[in-house]
Length: 126
Image (cartoon, rainbow, N blue to C red; front, side, top):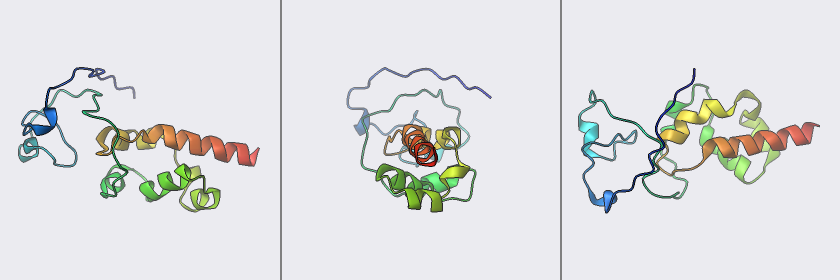
């Protein structure tokens, strides 16, 4: 399946200070989470830059496999090959983490990190 959404390159002045009645939030950050059946126009806007990698338990709810995605990503970031293998890097591809990247409160480029980890593993095996 292919899903196409708008880029979302428009900016809001003081958008962080608004209550967010018309914004979707997977982490229930905005007041819009009080209206779960409301439909939103989705886009790829980051609404700010990258933030610290926060352990919120959000990825575990979104990944279809029974793995620890945050720990896997952190092992990839520090290039710990043994830990990557133990945490299941051979079982995942970038698309498995696409929803995590969209809903990430930290705005981390999860698929790029995973791709770099898979590239390291291919280089190690080859």
